[in-house]
Image (cartoon, helix red, strand yellow):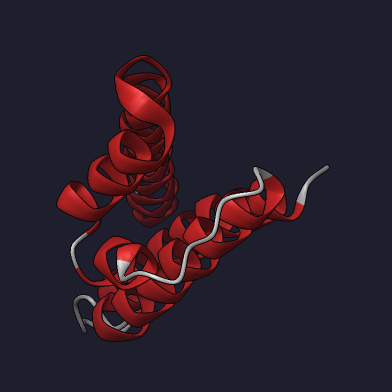
Length: 125
């Protein structure tokens, strides 16, 4: 597995861990979104590292600000990097994969949240 794919795997895992921590602290302690800021910073670091690794794996010189764009505003940074460095066809493919990846991470996090809440509510009854 390439380094960029490993980073994406850890990025996905970070969503799951943040969801579990947020839901359990909200249910048992009453504090909401304890991982928001740390997870946002971690996600930005993952986006930055992914962009640099992906470029290095594809033999692209990435001395410009694309990794920072991916880190600070991924919605624009990832498509800008993909389209500028890979052209329209491959760039759109990379962008589509990024969108599917994020939607999948959000969906799985939502499902885990629902499952934890269901278990919590069932254990109270």
